[in-house]
Image (cartoon, rainbow, N blue to C red; front, side):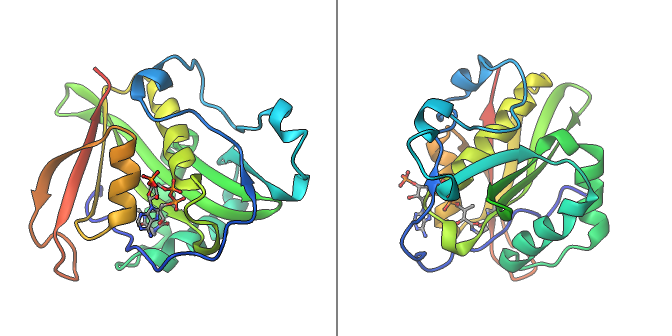
Length: 206
Ligand SMILES: CC(C)(COP(=O)(O)OP(=O)(O)OC[C@H]1O[C@@H](n2cnc3c(N)ncnc32)[C@H](O)[C@@H]1OP(=O)(O)O)[C@@H](O)C(=O)NCCC(=O)NCCS
């Protein structure tokens, strides 16, 4: 089930940034380890008091099925391989605390979908299955913040490591993950239906 996901392809540069993105946890996994619980919103009240409310991006953990169409709409736009509602439900219903949405007002502008289970009966492995940010909201660190939220939550549930696959040509995703400390673990030849190779990226917590 965890194969051939997260293969979104990069797009041309987005329109100029408008909304302000609240700072989230920074890159290093050690820094994330200090956080004790999964966070449902990243609003910094001191800073946000200076920013018009309409420009603030907030981060929410998945709450209910009503959010499913937004998540699917965002992710489907960018994937070269379509997934059925059952694939989304498999991840989101089993690991709802590992699914986060980025909201601009009432509009969902980003989403991340993950899982966490035992790998080879030894290590608790987190897996980032899907990640997408609306084209008009890219390069604002929303993707970075969503991944950081997912990592915080995985650490809360005692993950030992986190992995994902992405197309070898997906420069935005590679930059995002490598900035966060992920390393290239394996090249998977012809992994995707479109023939493109994948890179498996990995972040070790211990
Ligand atoms: C990959 C994606 C989630 C990045 O989201 P984002 O919110 O724009 O990312 P961030 O703003 O956090 O940027 C992260 C890094 O990627 C870089 N980046 C983002 N878009 C880029 C682009 N088009 N070209 C080159 N670098 C890019 C940023 O510059 C930043 O690196 P830097 O800090 O060194 O400058 C987004 O491009 C997307 O939704 N793509 C389609 C779906 C996809 O590919 N998902 C990932 C599948 S694993």
